[in-house]
Length: 67
Image (cartoon, rainbow, N blue to C red; front, top):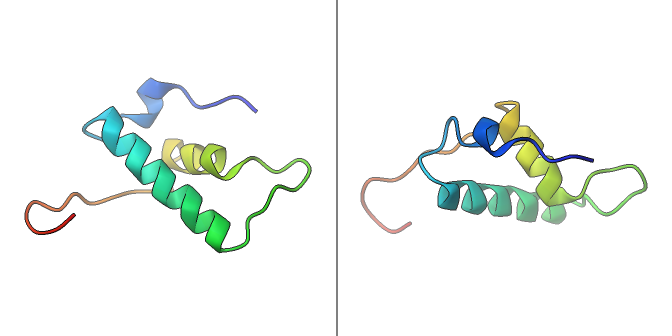
């Protein structure tokens, strides 16, 4: 499966670093929920990137406090 274009992913994010952090956290959550490697199913990171590209996954940056 092809990855979504980087330009499409960074529209709602302020940096590529934020993209990596958000995608990694979502992929970890998918794995914790039991999304395992099944034939025909995208890997958790790929699924997280597609969710971000389609606007299904958002994040809120904290201005103060522990991140």
